[in-house]
Length: 234
Image (tube, rainbow, N blue to C red; front, side):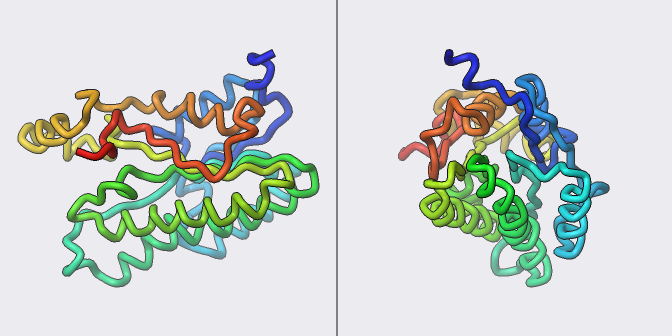
């Protein structure tokens, strides 16, 4: 019975930023368990352009491919001290990381409500709990996402829709390759992680599958940390 609850056959899943890293691993997992996965990258839809988001969803709707499962994984980040952070860059991060998520939720909601089933998942960041000194803006966008999740989850729970937040810690992905290539910085980061190991993209896939399937039907408004204990109090 439990195995059947993970079955996503007949479901359509949209995973943003799903051609590499965490997004790809999540997309692969949902596909493995039967979902039809719509893969996204900036060539498919540029999330920094609000009009492009609506055009993309108009196309999905016309094709009968509006998602039953949305995983808002794509995000951008810049490592700049907050006092020097350019306003236009901050606005771009807020658009991609927060406003795009809100708009995609809005576009997915009518279908999910009508069918009495839906999964809205954001991929947040350990920065919500432990902001990097040079990524205060990024941390703020992810905290905004977390609040959006909790606010919407309460309102749509009776409609068969769950809304949750996956929070990765330090993953050995392309995004972190340069930073973790610095042995001094890498040692500092490793020593801060109780498990003393970096996460791999597939470490996020199991939790995403749980939240996307009927196995996780009673989980909503939750933040699930995938960080090896990094966010735990020191």
